[in-house]
Amino acid sequence: MSWCKVYLLINFNFLAKIVAHHLSVFGLSLLLLGVPGFAKAEPARLKVAVLDDAPPMSYRDTAGNLTGFSYAIAKALCADMKVICEFQVTKLDYMIDDLAAGHFDIAAIGLLSTPERRQKIIFSQPFYRSISLWFAKPGIQPGSPGVRVSAFRGSVQENYVKAQGWESISAQTDVQMIEQLSAGVAQAMIAPLMTSFNLQNNPRFLQLGLTPTVLQAPELEGRASFGISPKRAEIKEPLDKALENIQRNGTFDRINTQFLPFRVQ
Image (tube, rainbow, N blue to C red):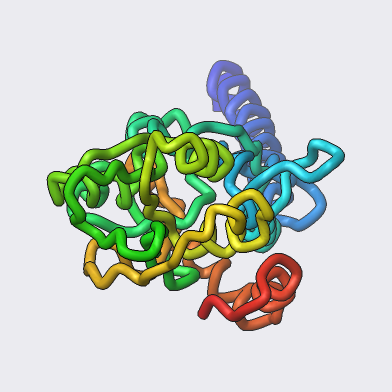
């Protein structure tokens, strides 16, 4: 065998050992990535839109901290999914459009699924049943001529008032509704069940002497869900699973008892 062939054989064997060594190290590195505790990915982050003026669903307590039924449910869902949720306060009247545009990943507010909304956003599994109530002085019925009706801006209740051809007065909060009724700017109001419950605990509202009537309209009743951005469609399955988990392990019931005097499911 010539010296040239011997030299090439020695170098080939040397190179083969180097390649084999690096491949084994690379393979070990890949293996370690799958071992718990060796390479942990950062928890996913979700931007969650909430209201801070809609008690008892989502509002600020006396210390200025966010709290409420919907807010607590959202926190429980985030914990179950093992994700970090960044809660951002917004307003109802542009929450749907912001969610559709991807400014938020989830809207932590009870939303009724309407055909118009389904064209823009995705809905989670429902988590409570909602109805709407009409409040007015005795004798003032839905559809009475000359009656101005207060409803939350951007809500299904406001859309319903407009669809009936009634004169609508927009309100941002339930306190603003009371002010409109007290000043005679509005003669009636339509509010979802949870807002109606909160109003019944407000002395200023009770002084108005309004009579509640449940509105029998399909577009005003149904099961409320969280909204999901269409840009984060992959969130729906784990969010629905987390909702099932907190319903099964008792977390949902504990939150229900903490914020509401009745069962919502």
